[in-house]
Length: 498
Image (spheres, helix red, strand yellow):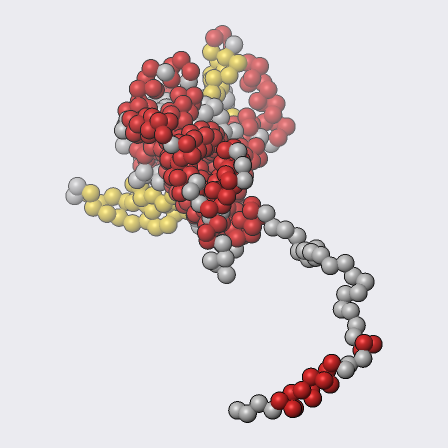
């Protein structure tokens, strides 16, 4: 390509002859400098929470954990049944939801289907409200004899029927006055024990009807029961038996009405009742409260101890690191079950089972946290930004808390959060196996409830289902929630979700 020197010189002279008035300064009256950011600065934790919010699974699990925590706090307060009160008459009462009962859905109504012979059918038929539905009647052969059988639905609350109460004269008069005022019948005629023909029915307040030696009820021409009440010389039924020269009255009451008289509500437990007659709904909340408080306290204290020891090990190393690593190795080899068993035997009687359990968890739980912190400090203390901070004269405390810990926060938080379900699971195992006994009228735990219900797994599965479901949901949600926090607080994953 030929270069035209004359044409180039002509264009150059043309540009060189441009008048000065055609030139203008671009920033004549402006001060040049850094411009103010149009957006607010985003800190480390705010950025982490923003990225955590994008993890839908972890957010949902966080809400579930919040609901479980609120349940543990609020349920014993709002429940009409005290978590510390029990009634043996309603042992293993089935779950009952008033809404399901009113809608007639046929489940969660406190009833169960049972097959029974004539004797048992007569027994429950004589109790008001015990038989809610006769599903079918049929005959079957038993030992060469044809017997009549019934498939019926039995109300687990109403089947308690009648009960014998021993009252003082003042208590009897007060209850009679309430009966007349409220219209609820409490008292029923007492039974003449001399007319009981089946020995198995002796002292049973529900057998108020005439029956043969096998227990089958005698009926009149209309098919109704024939009573065997005590009567005076005039033929009037007796409502009580006087004892202690009139100081005490032995009475026969319908127990559901007596419960209403005592508590102001009829028995209707949402999750059913356990083997002692505790309301599982409020009792489980009480146990969950203990498990959560214990686990969160242990995790918090273990986190502080683990961060201090792990940071010193990882940052300084040397003899301190060597000493504590040997100590942790020795502690780690001690069987947890054996250690807790020994402490429960020799220490629980002095300071109580909860303090002993708390000490045992602290004794072991800091080891995992300190190992995680130590590994993270060894990983980050040689990074360029740490070396640069040390070169600029930053103190060890600033390097530890401002430069290394924030970068290790993801793993540390995950370890501490995941230690919470670990403590809950271990506590549940210890109480389930009977190594730790937390059962009392004012104290329980989820593991204790599982231990008490294991003998009734096949007959009353609700007693073990609700505690097992609670702890399963709690552990799953804690794990997913902890993994979400780990990803959110890990700086190396920043931007990976975009």
